[in-house]
Length: 240
Ligand code: SAH
Image (cartoon, rainbow, N blue to C red; front, side, top):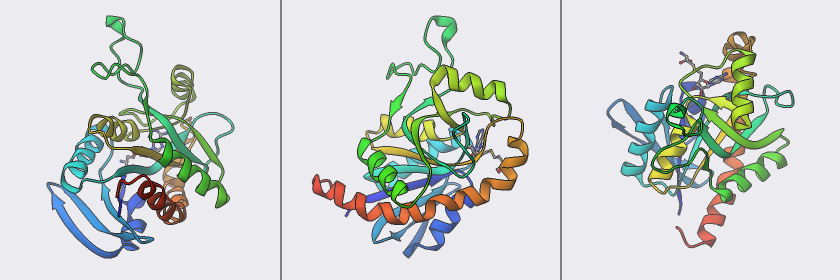
């Protein structure tokens, strides 16, 4: 059976999943509490990583080394960028980028990850297609594209526009690219799945507190429906 790691930054992004796990056990490592159990018959490990890139990277690495997941999905809310992306829509990562990684003074492109020598890290295409197709079947408004992360709550239109223009990003948040970068370094397939809580503009300060909890409820049903499909897909390829 495949094992899926599910990481969310805030309590409201993971609590519902944790409470519906069957045969649940928990294990603490440092300040992280990892919940192991079943969701829709699939073996899962769910953890709250906290806000920002450092917390997300450390938590992802611990999840991978300690629990050896076959895939990692970062769930949560995000600022949607662009007029067609509305509060409550889902954005799934084709790729992730760290919008605040900047060695341009040395001639590198913005967002360049020296070492891998990449700007964008691609998500796993099987995870992407299973989650997108399932989300559409469930009647969600779904966008797939680049998700940009940085240690910044984006809350004005000019910041959001810059991120969109520089990286063609459809959403911005604070952990996804860090989870993706860590998974890339550790050779673990990953996906970032975000529900839009605000539009990363001047109203984000009002919209975020109002919609974060509500938007986080958008992907519970999707995860429950997608996990069994994913399990078949991965098992079909002999990775159980
Ligand atoms: N002290 C606050 C901080 C929340 S930061 C708290 O603990 O609740 C916002 C969180 O939501 C981050 O995890 C980020 O990934 C996501 N997010 C939602 N909208 C965002 C935006 N416009 N810019 C950056 N991150 C956003």
